[in-house]
Image 1 (cartoon, rainbow, N blue to C red):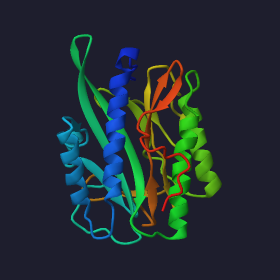
Image 2: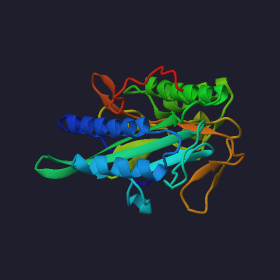
Image 3: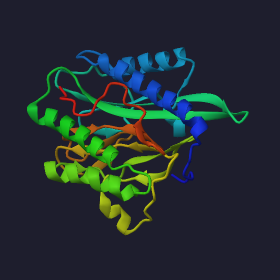
Image 4: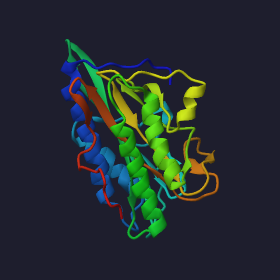
Length: 271
């Protein structure tokens, strides 16, 4: 990622909370629209209109050249899917990832704050196997969230997420993971979803003022991935379904706050 770790000051927490709330709100408003016949492009247009109508910026649009406000990854597509005009079908699973950027004054200067979260929605009725995938990936997310404590380390998050993945025997996507959040969106530390990463790389202590985006990606089959010719969409190599969930966590002296969790999603029975 290259960008240094960002430590927010207490006077910035409310703006960071608002960015998280907005991202969570547009994510679930978009998810409420998911149904057979709707296209990912229609979801994208809705989300961009909503974000701009609130006076803010869709983080992803233009970020490193990404063309849309939402990443929408359907079925075997894992992350970074470019919304298209192909209608959704009954039984599809639809990962929606969204960022919202707002700007507020801090110490007399403009400062940007980014809310970032993802959720995999069922389009109509999905198979029991796929429903379990969604539930277990959400469980992996919350295991990672529960491992966030000031003074502990990023590897504790990775270990917790990986534990759920191994126990449920899913493929664990290793090339992508969570990340720190700063004014320029992605920053260090990288948050892998497997502990062995730290056999070759430095671990990072979790500190008050950090904002961490935790995002497991579990596959029904292999952990192997491929990239589409579009240069963005990441797909399971065996073309079996994948799920992706993400929340943003603010670390404070009092504990942690899951600032994107606008609908109390822990333990949801997903269908």
